[in-house]
Image (tube, rainbow, N blue to C red; front, side, top):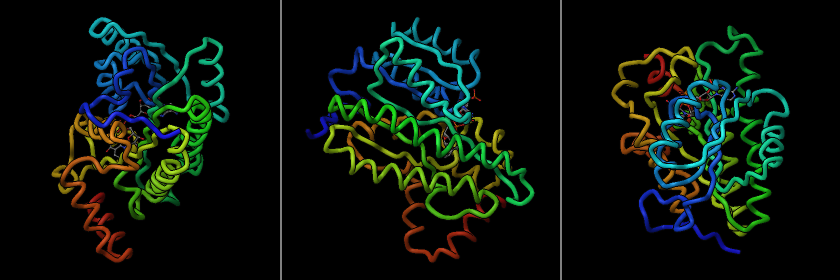
Length: 275
Ligand SMILES: NC(=O)c1ccc[n+]([C@@H]2O[C@H](COP(=O)([O-])OP(=O)(O)OC[C@H]3O[C@@H](n4cnc5c(N)ncnc54)[C@H](OP(=O)(O)O)[C@@H]3O)[C@@H](O)[C@H]2O)c1
Protein backbone atom coordinates (compact mmCIF):
# COMPACT_ATOMS: atom_id res chain seq x y z
CA UNK A 1 0.00 0.00 0.00
CA UNK A 2 1.28 3.48 -0.80
CA UNK A 3 1.65 6.03 1.96
CA UNK A 4 -1.05 8.61 2.35
CA UNK A 5 0.82 11.57 3.81
CA UNK A 6 -1.19 14.75 3.63
CA UNK A 7 0.55 17.24 1.37
CA UNK A 8 -1.97 20.03 1.72
CA UNK A 9 -2.19 21.63 5.12
CA UNK A 10 0.92 23.34 6.47
CA UNK A 11 1.42 21.33 9.65
CA UNK A 12 -1.16 18.62 9.23
CA UNK A 13 1.07 15.66 10.00
CA UNK A 14 -1.68 13.12 10.10
CA UNK A 15 -3.98 14.59 7.49
CA UNK A 16 -7.71 14.76 8.07
CA UNK A 17 -7.55 11.94 10.56
CA UNK A 18 -5.36 13.95 12.95
CA UNK A 19 -7.89 14.29 15.77
CA UNK A 20 -7.77 11.13 17.85
CA UNK A 21 -4.43 9.94 16.47
CA UNK A 22 -1.59 9.60 18.96
CA UNK A 23 2.06 10.66 18.84
CA UNK A 24 4.88 9.41 21.05
CA UNK A 25 7.46 12.16 21.60
CA UNK A 26 10.72 11.17 23.26
CA UNK A 27 12.73 13.88 25.00
CA UNK A 28 9.52 15.78 25.70
CA UNK A 29 10.74 17.44 28.90
CA UNK A 30 12.60 20.30 27.22
CA UNK A 31 13.73 21.98 24.01
CA UNK A 32 12.51 20.65 20.69
CA UNK A 33 10.43 17.92 22.35
CA UNK A 34 8.25 20.55 24.02
CA UNK A 35 7.75 22.30 20.67
CA UNK A 36 6.72 19.06 18.96
CA UNK A 37 4.25 18.42 21.77
CA UNK A 38 2.73 21.89 21.50
CA UNK A 39 2.43 21.75 17.70
CA UNK A 40 0.87 18.29 17.65
CA UNK A 41 -1.51 18.99 20.54
CA UNK A 42 -2.70 22.09 18.68
CA UNK A 43 -3.76 19.70 15.90
CA UNK A 44 -5.74 17.63 18.45
CA UNK A 45 -3.25 14.78 18.30
CA UNK A 46 -3.16 12.83 21.60
CA UNK A 47 0.29 12.37 23.06
CA UNK A 48 2.65 10.13 24.96
CA UNK A 49 5.49 12.16 26.49
CA UNK A 50 8.67 10.25 27.36
CA UNK A 51 11.86 11.48 29.06
CA UNK A 52 13.56 11.01 32.45
CA UNK A 53 12.19 14.08 34.25
CA UNK A 54 8.54 13.66 35.18
CA UNK A 55 7.84 17.14 36.52
CA UNK A 56 8.35 19.26 33.38
CA UNK A 57 6.32 16.74 31.37
CA UNK A 58 3.47 16.88 33.89
CA UNK A 59 3.43 20.67 33.73
CA UNK A 60 3.43 20.60 29.93
CA UNK A 61 0.71 17.95 29.82
CA UNK A 62 -1.55 19.92 32.17
CA UNK A 63 -1.19 23.02 30.02
CA UNK A 64 -1.83 21.17 26.74
CA UNK A 65 -4.84 19.27 28.12
CA UNK A 66 -6.34 22.57 29.26
CA UNK A 67 -5.57 24.42 26.00
CA UNK A 68 -6.39 21.72 23.47
CA UNK A 69 -8.44 19.07 25.27
CA UNK A 70 -6.13 16.24 24.16
CA UNK A 71 -5.37 13.04 26.05
CA UNK A 72 -1.76 12.89 27.30
CA UNK A 73 0.11 9.99 28.89
CA UNK A 74 3.39 10.60 30.72
CA UNK A 75 6.13 7.95 30.60
CA UNK A 76 9.14 8.84 32.76
CA UNK A 77 11.91 6.60 31.43
CA UNK A 78 15.67 6.51 30.91
CA UNK A 79 15.88 5.55 27.25
CA UNK A 80 19.63 4.99 27.50
CA UNK A 81 19.03 1.99 29.77
CA UNK A 82 19.33 -1.34 27.92
CA UNK A 83 15.90 -2.66 26.89
CA UNK A 84 14.17 0.68 27.60
CA UNK A 85 12.50 0.90 24.18
CA UNK A 86 10.95 -2.56 24.54
CA UNK A 87 9.75 -1.73 28.06
CA UNK A 88 8.13 1.48 26.82
CA UNK A 89 6.42 -0.42 24.00
CA UNK A 90 5.11 -3.11 26.38
CA UNK A 91 3.89 -0.51 28.84
CA UNK A 92 1.85 1.16 26.08
CA UNK A 93 0.65 -2.18 24.64
CA UNK A 94 -0.66 -3.22 28.07
CA UNK A 95 -2.95 -0.18 28.00
CA UNK A 96 -3.82 -0.67 24.29
CA UNK A 97 -2.23 2.68 23.42
CA UNK A 98 -1.51 2.76 19.69
CA UNK A 99 1.19 5.09 18.31
CA UNK A 100 0.49 6.67 14.92
CA UNK A 101 3.36 9.20 14.95
CA UNK A 102 6.75 8.51 16.53
CA UNK A 103 8.97 11.53 17.16
CA UNK A 104 12.40 10.07 17.94
CA UNK A 105 13.74 13.25 19.52
CA UNK A 106 15.54 12.36 22.79
CA UNK A 107 19.27 12.75 22.41
CA UNK A 108 22.23 14.75 23.59
CA UNK A 109 25.70 15.80 22.53
CA UNK A 110 29.11 15.48 24.17
CA UNK A 111 31.66 18.16 23.46
CA UNK A 112 35.37 17.80 24.13
CA UNK A 113 38.39 15.66 23.42
CA UNK A 114 37.33 12.05 22.89
CA UNK A 115 40.20 10.57 24.93
CA UNK A 116 39.52 12.91 27.84
CA UNK A 117 35.83 12.06 28.02
CA UNK A 118 35.03 9.04 30.27
CA UNK A 119 34.09 6.25 27.89
CA UNK A 120 30.88 5.51 29.86
CA UNK A 121 29.55 8.94 28.92
CA UNK A 122 30.20 8.26 25.25
CA UNK A 123 28.63 4.80 25.30
CA UNK A 124 25.59 6.12 27.20
CA UNK A 125 25.13 8.73 24.47
CA UNK A 126 25.47 6.10 21.75
CA UNK A 127 22.90 3.96 23.56
CA UNK A 128 20.41 6.86 23.54
CA UNK A 129 21.18 8.49 20.18
CA UNK A 130 21.56 5.26 18.20
CA UNK A 131 20.33 2.13 20.00
CA UNK A 132 17.15 3.56 21.51
CA UNK A 133 16.27 5.33 18.24
CA UNK A 134 16.79 2.11 16.30
CA UNK A 135 14.83 -0.04 18.78
CA UNK A 136 11.92 2.42 18.98
CA UNK A 137 11.76 2.64 15.18
CA UNK A 138 11.66 -1.17 15.04
CA UNK A 139 9.05 -1.65 17.76
CA UNK A 140 6.62 1.03 16.57
CA UNK A 141 7.55 0.79 12.86
CA UNK A 142 6.46 -2.87 12.79
CA UNK A 143 3.03 -2.00 14.13
CA UNK A 144 2.69 0.90 11.69
CA UNK A 145 3.73 -1.24 8.72
CA UNK A 146 1.25 -3.95 9.76
CA UNK A 147 -1.53 -1.33 9.87
CA UNK A 148 -0.38 0.22 6.56
CA UNK A 149 0.07 3.72 7.97
CA UNK A 150 2.27 5.71 10.30
CA UNK A 151 4.85 8.47 10.55
CA UNK A 152 8.31 8.49 12.10
CA UNK A 153 10.42 11.61 12.58
CA UNK A 154 14.09 11.19 13.50
CA UNK A 155 16.30 13.93 14.91
CA UNK A 156 19.59 13.96 13.04
CA UNK A 157 21.73 17.12 12.94
CA UNK A 158 23.73 19.42 10.70
CA UNK A 159 26.72 17.97 12.57
CA UNK A 160 25.80 14.58 11.10
CA UNK A 161 26.65 15.76 7.59
CA UNK A 162 30.41 15.55 8.18
CA UNK A 163 32.90 14.46 10.85
CA UNK A 164 33.34 17.05 13.61
CA UNK A 165 36.49 17.04 15.80
CA UNK A 166 35.55 17.73 19.47
CA UNK A 167 32.06 16.39 18.72
CA UNK A 168 33.47 13.20 17.18
CA UNK A 169 31.14 10.57 18.64
CA UNK A 170 28.05 12.82 18.73
CA UNK A 171 28.42 13.86 15.08
CA UNK A 172 28.88 10.20 14.16
CA UNK A 173 25.68 9.21 16.01
CA UNK A 174 23.80 11.79 13.95
CA UNK A 175 25.40 10.54 10.71
CA UNK A 176 23.97 7.17 11.67
CA UNK A 177 20.51 8.61 12.32
CA UNK A 178 20.45 10.40 8.97
CA UNK A 179 21.66 7.38 6.97
CA UNK A 180 19.34 5.03 8.88
CA UNK A 181 16.36 7.35 8.50
CA UNK A 182 16.82 7.95 4.77
CA UNK A 183 17.20 4.23 4.12
CA UNK A 184 14.09 3.44 6.20
CA UNK A 185 12.23 6.13 4.27
CA UNK A 186 12.59 4.01 1.11
CA UNK A 187 12.11 0.67 2.89
CA UNK A 188 8.90 1.56 4.70
CA UNK A 189 7.23 3.72 2.06
CA UNK A 190 5.58 0.72 0.36
CA UNK A 191 4.11 -0.18 3.78
CA UNK A 192 2.45 3.21 4.14
CA UNK A 193 4.94 4.48 6.73
CA UNK A 194 6.62 7.86 6.18
CA UNK A 195 10.09 8.24 7.73
CA UNK A 196 11.65 11.72 7.77
CA UNK A 197 14.99 12.82 9.22
CA UNK A 198 15.27 16.38 10.50
CA UNK A 199 18.70 18.08 10.57
CA UNK A 200 18.61 21.10 12.86
CA UNK A 201 21.58 23.41 13.05
CA UNK A 202 22.38 25.11 16.32
CA UNK A 203 19.10 25.65 18.17
CA UNK A 204 18.28 27.45 21.41
CA UNK A 205 17.47 24.52 23.74
CA UNK A 206 19.08 22.71 26.67
CA UNK A 207 21.53 21.12 24.17
CA UNK A 208 24.61 23.28 24.92
CA UNK A 209 24.31 22.78 28.68
CA UNK A 210 23.91 19.01 28.29
CA UNK A 211 26.82 18.82 25.81
CA UNK A 212 29.10 21.06 27.88
CA UNK A 213 29.69 23.04 24.71
CA UNK A 214 30.73 26.67 24.41
CA UNK A 215 28.72 28.77 21.96
CA UNK A 216 31.05 30.44 19.48
CA UNK A 217 30.21 33.78 17.86
CA UNK A 218 29.67 31.98 14.55
CA UNK A 219 27.22 29.55 16.18
CA UNK A 220 25.37 32.44 17.81
CA UNK A 221 24.85 33.98 14.39
CA UNK A 222 23.42 30.71 13.06
CA UNK A 223 21.24 29.89 16.09
CA UNK A 224 17.54 29.23 15.49
CA UNK A 225 14.62 29.27 17.91
CA UNK A 226 13.23 25.78 18.51
CA UNK A 227 9.71 26.50 17.20
CA UNK A 228 10.61 26.98 13.48
CA UNK A 229 12.94 23.96 13.70
CA UNK A 230 10.15 21.73 14.99
CA UNK A 231 7.76 23.17 12.40
CA UNK A 232 10.14 22.38 9.57
CA UNK A 233 10.41 18.76 10.75
CA UNK A 234 6.66 18.26 11.01
CA UNK A 235 6.10 20.00 7.67
CA UNK A 236 8.63 17.70 5.95
CA UNK A 237 7.01 14.68 7.60
CA UNK A 238 3.56 15.76 6.39
CA UNK A 239 4.96 16.18 2.88
CA UNK A 240 6.52 12.72 2.93
CA UNK A 241 10.12 13.93 2.57
CA UNK A 242 13.10 11.69 3.34
CA UNK A 243 15.01 14.46 5.12
CA UNK A 244 15.11 18.18 5.71
CA UNK A 245 17.64 20.73 6.95
CA UNK A 246 15.95 23.31 9.18
CA UNK A 247 16.31 26.97 8.21
CA UNK A 248 17.70 28.86 5.22
CA UNK A 249 21.22 29.49 6.58
CA UNK A 250 21.59 25.86 7.62
CA UNK A 251 20.50 24.82 4.12
CA UNK A 252 23.25 27.04 2.70
CA UNK A 253 25.79 25.40 5.04
CA UNK A 254 24.57 21.92 4.06
CA UNK A 255 24.71 22.74 0.36
CA UNK A 256 28.17 24.33 0.47
CA UNK A 257 29.36 21.23 2.29
CA UNK A 258 28.76 19.19 -0.85
CA UNK A 259 31.20 21.35 -2.77
CA UNK A 260 34.00 21.02 -0.21
CA UNK A 261 36.59 18.24 0.33
CA UNK A 262 36.05 16.26 3.56
CA UNK A 263 39.31 17.46 5.11
CA UNK A 264 38.11 21.04 4.67
CA UNK A 265 34.62 20.16 6.01
CA UNK A 266 36.24 18.91 9.23
CA UNK A 267 38.40 22.00 9.59
CA UNK A 268 35.48 24.36 8.96
CA UNK A 269 33.18 22.58 11.40
CA UNK A 270 35.82 22.48 14.12
CA UNK A 271 36.24 26.23 13.62
CA UNK A 272 32.49 26.77 13.85
CA UNK A 273 31.92 24.76 17.05
CA UNK A 274 35.13 25.79 18.83
CA UNK A 275 35.84 29.34 17.67
N1 LIG B 1 19.74 22.09 20.01
C1 LIG B 1 20.56 21.86 19.00
O1 LIG B 1 21.42 22.71 18.66
C2 LIG B 1 20.41 20.60 18.20
C3 LIG B 1 20.98 20.54 16.92
C4 LIG B 1 20.86 19.38 16.18
C5 LIG B 1 20.18 18.29 16.69
N2 LIG B 1 19.64 18.36 17.94
C6 LIG B 1 18.95 17.16 18.45
O2 LIG B 1 17.64 17.52 18.86
C7 LIG B 1 17.16 16.57 19.82
C8 LIG B 1 16.50 17.30 20.97
O3 LIG B 1 17.48 18.01 21.72
P1 LIG B 1 17.25 19.50 22.23
O4 LIG B 1 18.08 20.39 21.39
O5 LIG B 1 15.80 19.79 22.39
O6 LIG B 1 18.00 19.43 23.66
P2 LIG B 1 17.42 19.39 25.14
O7 LIG B 1 16.64 20.62 25.41
O8 LIG B 1 18.60 19.09 26.00
O9 LIG B 1 16.42 18.14 25.14
C9 LIG B 1 16.87 16.81 25.16
C10 LIG B 1 15.74 15.91 25.58
O10 LIG B 1 16.21 14.55 25.59
C11 LIG B 1 15.83 13.96 26.82
N3 LIG B 1 16.79 12.94 27.24
C12 LIG B 1 18.13 13.08 27.46
N4 LIG B 1 18.64 11.94 27.91
C13 LIG B 1 17.60 11.05 27.99
C14 LIG B 1 17.49 9.70 28.40
N5 LIG B 1 18.58 9.00 28.83
N6 LIG B 1 16.29 9.10 28.35
C15 LIG B 1 15.19 9.78 27.93
N7 LIG B 1 15.22 11.06 27.52
C16 LIG B 1 16.43 11.68 27.56
C17 LIG B 1 15.84 15.11 27.82
O11 LIG B 1 14.96 14.84 28.90
P3 LIG B 1 15.41 14.35 30.37
O12 LIG B 1 16.66 15.10 30.74
O13 LIG B 1 14.22 14.72 31.21
O14 LIG B 1 15.59 12.88 30.25
C18 LIG B 1 15.25 16.23 26.98
O15 LIG B 1 13.85 16.18 27.02
C19 LIG B 1 18.39 15.73 20.21
O16 LIG B 1 18.34 14.49 19.55
C20 LIG B 1 19.56 16.56 19.71
O17 LIG B 1 20.69 15.77 19.42
C21 LIG B 1 19.74 19.48 18.70
